[in-house]
Image (cartoon, rainbow, N blue to C red):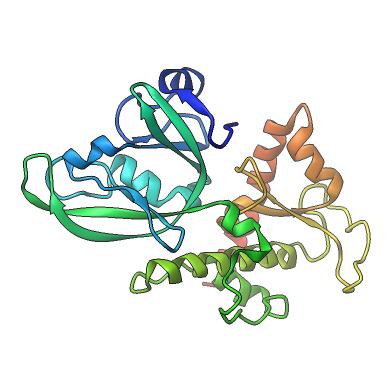
Length: 276
């Protein structure tokens, strides 16, 4: 969709995808994406975006005056994983033109105090954004961090609990980043266990058994362009390789992904009812 480090004219982006042409958070209607724009000029309105030493991009929420609230764009950004929306971050390089930083994941947020456009001190929301690559690259985690025990041996109920868990607000940004990594792994394991060796797309038995004596199915993210990164159980499905290719490359891929979405929604509703 977008190429890292490539420049784009912002109006061209909106002509293709829609969304608000002004402001930092753009939420195109009928699209599974949210567009984020950052620039140094935001400092005059109390915004101060940028990278931390831990590889987290702090992104100030929208709202030029008064306390920032979780409405409109701020709510959409906070809930993007649950809603199956991809985040794409751009930075202004000159008037009207932006450079694509990459696809991001919001792993949490925090509040701070600072001046608004009228120099009045107000409460601001700082979103913590992590590059999607962090979750798909096996070597991204600090080797000194102690990994959690494998989730493969857990029950379906235990995996579902882990898959639905949110990062604890009292954790540090880095701890929230790591927690989302583990949550993404739990979601993948959960989808595989939920399938019970049967493709959730075509309802056929997994094509073969792996060396680990497990039925082979692939995890597909229904509302993502890629199959990387953390997600919500309602957007993740375990399917056979043939169905997986269909979901990505078939002429009817859009309709097929919608069909897969309905299947998962029905399954999750039944599982949620069973745990009440």
